Image 1: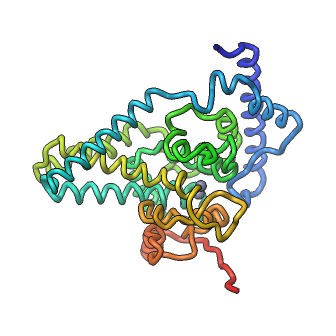
Image 2 (image 1 turned 45 degrees about the vertical axis):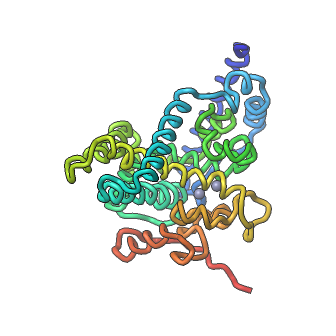
Image 3 (image 1 turned 90 degrees about the horizontal axis):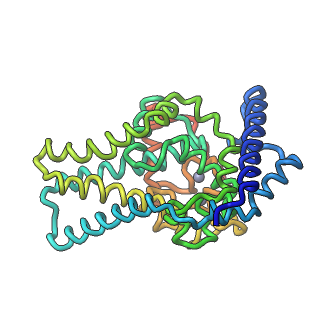
Length: 348
Ligand SMILES: [Zn+2]
Ligand SMILES: [Zn+2]
């Protein structure tokens, strides 16, 4: 059934109201001091409380923007990618090796670059500001983020801040209470919940625009992603060591991209469902070493959701598969990273 037009009008007005409220609050923040915590929301005025209640409870949500309304273009896109990924792995198992080991190494280097750009870049640097980076490192991470193909830095960080503030609620983009599949990839295959959409308009994220590298990437994302995530990975093996375009496409584009996606998604699914909770038992995120192995150190999620400003996202480093911490430490030694924040825990 189509949504009631009055409800649609009311929702439009509510969203406009929330946007205006966010703009007012952001202006107040800009005129005041830097916020202590980069995640800020507006004060809960009576009107905005009522507006949020409307967004949260209306039939409109479940008729027109239902949390499980399928987005077929994404289902086809990710379905095709996954099929190619499985085909490539079967090809690898049957033949025993690639036509050229250089292609495998090239794909692996791209995987590490793109994964690090998510973990050390969009996550620890831009979302949480757990350390600072000079422009060459920020440029390196921004280009790697285009290889990773996980939306623009601005959108990624804004949504991640909403995830932290509203974990395991309707406003959490990949709410793990809806099940493993939804938290892993289902959230990308369905329409976003209106409560999440409303919060993306309120959450403080203007600080991200102050970085010209983030601004440039956001406004040129399509071209950058196409060149660094598709064209270069496809043609470099062909021109440099004579790889066929098909093998290059399978391994340096599809397998590399899908592997990086799953390793990131496991942080939202497995690390929110399986593992110990030694730092805060009242929250769902868990310590999951297996996720850390694939996600270069991002699996210590109970620690991370408890101490979001820690650049290591865990108590330990390389010995605990925290390759991202090693990368930031090396960048720090080279003078490219600085002001690395870390929690000092008292041992009893
Ligand atoms: Zn985080
Ligand atoms: Zn999380």
